[in-house]
Image (cartoon, rainbow, N blue to C red; front, side):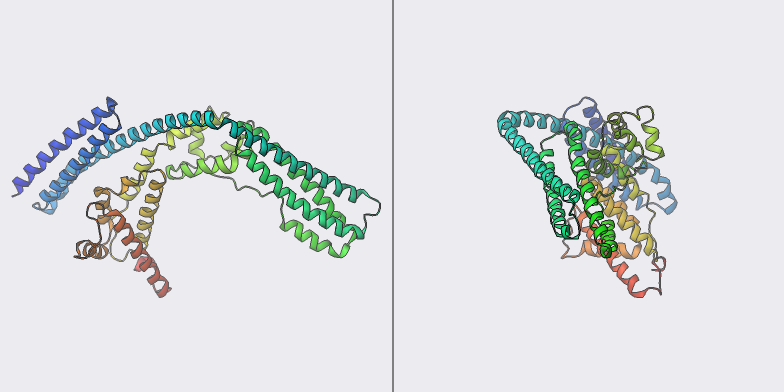
Length: 424
């Protein structure tokens, strides 16, 4: 029986090797996404088959022989992982190119069909912004006139309060009009126009400060209240500086946050310095030599940290590096569930969630569970009323792990401080 199982395993390996070579050749020859995907699917099927045949063969071996044969399957697993990375990189690159081409076509068509309409919307937004600014300036002049008048005593406080409230409303209107106008601008145009709202904000701060100081001066009893209100109503919020230290999984969020939260407030001259201040030692080494050109810095960082295939590989690797959990290691189980859940969410974010839902990935997770939890999972899968999809067990496995995690946390809370997570 053992020799027969070994023979079947050898045949499965032969088929796996042929499919591996076919996939690599189709990628090298750029045969197209459809053919490459077909070859990858066939390779995946061959990998599952050889993995199954290996498991069957090891059932006939002694413990020492099992360990000696482990390198055999690990070598094939490394080859499959490399092929998977090659396929993901090829597919994502092709998809990006096709998407870029499609977007370019759509952009040109939209420009032809809606140029007139877009132009009118831009003009309307521009006029609306200028009109709002004109009203704002008029109100600022009115406030200054009140403050500079000889009878601007305590009797002028109600009028100043009224102007102050009107200015707050108009500032919000100016920001809304500016945001609407910015919807039609590209990045370079937006950078040139950002000074407008900063000037309006500066004028607002200046006149409001004068109003509050004047009221404090003519109404001493309310000075403390005004000062407290002034401190609690900061004009400009300080943006918490972003930080990227080289973690592959943090790079997509860092890039998006910087472009959305930080970049709009920068100029071409200040952007490189601000960007460098967000980088840790490792990414700073990557951009060395081009650290005065933010476009080139992004290009360097994208090459090292922005490859979806590398990110997917790092996430899968983080799951594989978890040591099998033993009975009583509650803390380790909680950390393991967090790794699986966060890894899945990160892969969903880049559209590669299938990389963690494969049969081999699920098998790795099952082997990491403690014997007690693995037994419960086996009962759930094999039950006559089981809703687990045998061809795609990951959704049910993730739900099971989260339920177990919640149960463990609840148990620890109820029994605390009698036990700790490590004694569960």
